[in-house]
Length: 249
Ligand SMILES: CC(C)(COP(=O)(O)OP(=O)(O)OC[C@H]1O[C@@H](n2cnc3c(N)ncnc32)[C@H](O)[C@@H]1OP(=O)(O)O)[C@@H](O)C(=O)NCCC(=O)NCCS
Image 1 (cartoon, protein in one colour):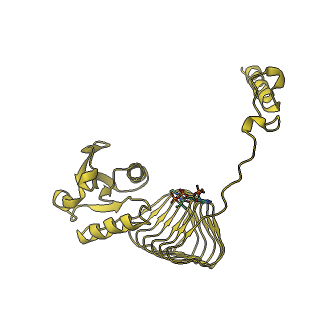
Image 2: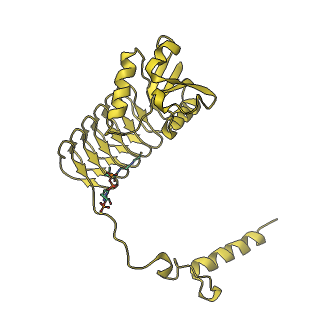
Image 3: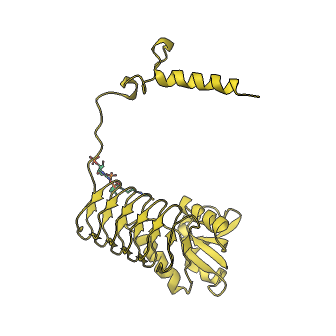
């Protein structure tokens, strides 16, 4: 639809450039980043300009912007640049992947990213500057408030509230009708069943390390250089190769 400046020059910014180029009507025309972070003046052949005076180079009248920062400083960095970009007069766009599942009536603010294979169920409300990463599931009637971030594969069951600046890590699960309080961090793989405390950091039990290595497991998994001791897995690879030869025309 229009020309867009991507804030950022990190790998995440490269990803956002890719998404917009291949899966949107927008055209990325430049990148912008704080001047101290400019190491190259071009990225993908596009200019990288200082955020401090981006408005005098690519004025907001002809360009929109998207802030591609992640959840650094518990989402504060993204919020800071989001607010500054708005103050400079930029309209901030959303990117909703064509491969995400969403439903009619979805309410979102601006500068939201909803990535591939995520599912945002009916009656969900999403505020400003929110990221729903790949494969996350946002249950019906959930509310994701401003500047929050849901990492890949996280599951928020129905009626969950994620308060401003909240972060839910990859593969975490939040039970239905639970509120994740402001500025909370829910670590990867954690299951949250009760309302959390503001600024709380929630982690689960670390996995247990077995007192043996992977080549000391049962024959199906173990690998030995001695052919007489090879397990069932190794024999199967050999027989698949033989079948492959037989099937050639
Ligand atoms: C919770 C979290 C933010 C803590 O980060 P951190 O301050 O860098 O802390 P560390 O990773 O050094 O972990 C501190 C301790 O907590 C433990 N821990 C951290 N996260 C844990 C988790 N999810 N489950 C169990 N234990 C965890 C670590 O093993 C470590 O234990 P130790 O002190 O005995 O060594 C981080 O572990 C996490 O889960 N980040 C989210 C990652 C993610 O989802 N990214 C998405 C990218 S899009």
